[in-house]
Length: 288
Image (cartoon, rainbow, N blue to C red; front, side, top):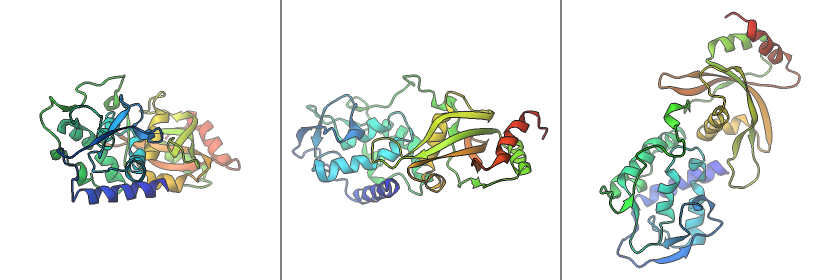
């Protein structure tokens, strides 16, 4: 359902592209940002203008549901200011003047987040065409010029947008060891999918990731990396993990030429599958 809602949101934005509905000269009113509009909580202000910059005038029927449609994209962490950018349009701050996002902010968010949309078969919506926003940065929301809060995204391995990796049920010992030899890393992880309709991501990594072969992965970042992979490659995730349960996997992967991390082969780790346990023990002394 979350994926369907996200796709519907993109369709709605495509229609909005045909009529950028907001007129800076029209009458507006200030209203509190409702608590149930959780996507735009903690943005640094508590009141928003209606209509917003997307032309939405009704909180209940337009603003709140449309804001929730963006949650799957924001949860990927595609850009540190993606939330600020989207909420400046969905829930613009209520001041004496209109504060739009600057063109530079739009470009920064678009360049990072458009590949995530492309991974799911969609282009950056024309309704968010960056040329619509002011180029002069004296009266608009600007992009960060330097990373803050320890944001070192470019220094860490990033999840690739990719075709779904091969899944092998009850593999032979030779298949497992050959796969380990071909991969840059091998990890044991429990992937989970939530049933509850909450603000939490639908897909997650349950517990600690165990390294069989660490390769380029960072111990403190691998949980987040795998969760981002699940949220970016949503179609694969829906086939890999059933709702309301966790599945333990052995995962192998490669680092692509652009530095992104791709999963290559997944082995569901069932209690009856003794070959996986044997392979992980033999790997320490195995010669490829």
